[in-house]
View: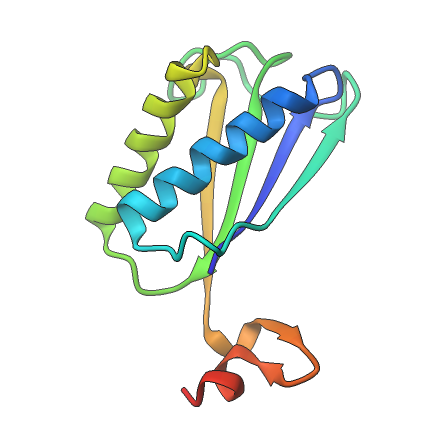
Length: 129
C-alpha cells in the first residue's frame, strides 16, 4: 500500500502530473506486487526557486523541469524489485514524453502499524497482522 507524493514545478500541467502518477502506480503494481486499488497520491507544486536539484549529481537533469517522486510503502521489497521499479518508472515516463532524466525517485518503507485508513485503527489491527 504505497502513498505517492509528487513534488513538481508549479508550471507542470495537471494532466502531466496525473500521467506521471499513473506511470508510477503501474510500475508499483508490475514490479512490487502492489494492489491495483492502492492508488494514493499527493501532488505538491513548487514555484521557481523552491526546488533545488543539482543539474549533474549522478546524471544530467534540467533543475527547472525535475520532478521528485516520493514513495512510502510497506517494507519487504527486495533490492531487485526496487531496482526494477526505478527502471520501469523511467521507461514509462519516457513513453508519455517526460524526460526520465528529470526525475528523482526515492522510497521510504514502514510497517502495517504505521497506516490507518479508517476509525477501525491501523492496518495491522484491521488485518490481524
